[in-house]
Image 1 (cartoon, rainbow, N blue to C red):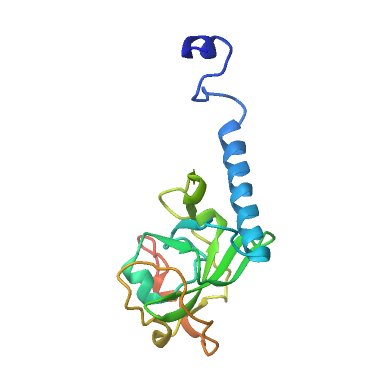
Image 2 (image 1 turned 90 degrees about the horizontal axis):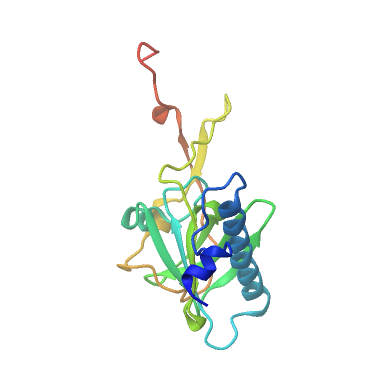
Length: 194
């Protein structure tokens, strides 16, 4: 069948402008496929030569990762889930994926909001899915009186690997939290309190 014939029958490869959000619906379906693949791997492991590349925005609200790793990858990182990872979980209610990996021999747990994921691939079958992620992350409103956020302690952020690698060890069980005031980071308007 020729491309002209396809276009005549409404099968153009690109979806024309529409008053219905087909692009959004298709992307939501692809995200659902990704989450089902991650759910399957969490429950059954990865069969055969299947493995996943997961690319996500490190600057997205809700991403939890070691500070040093975030410093090395301030915008985006790709992780590989293949032989050595642990505690892979998909929390659909909270719309997050979490997984344990080692970076430079140091075990870490990553928490990734689904909205921060920009790509998912299973190279074994040449499946590659790309997702729209706005350039500017959404700014979460901080309710009055709640101006603290837990962050990784500096000791947990010792990462020596120049690039993200698949997991190599067991989960670090002794990680704690520090509390940082957000008041210093709040934007002050012109003429506002200084």
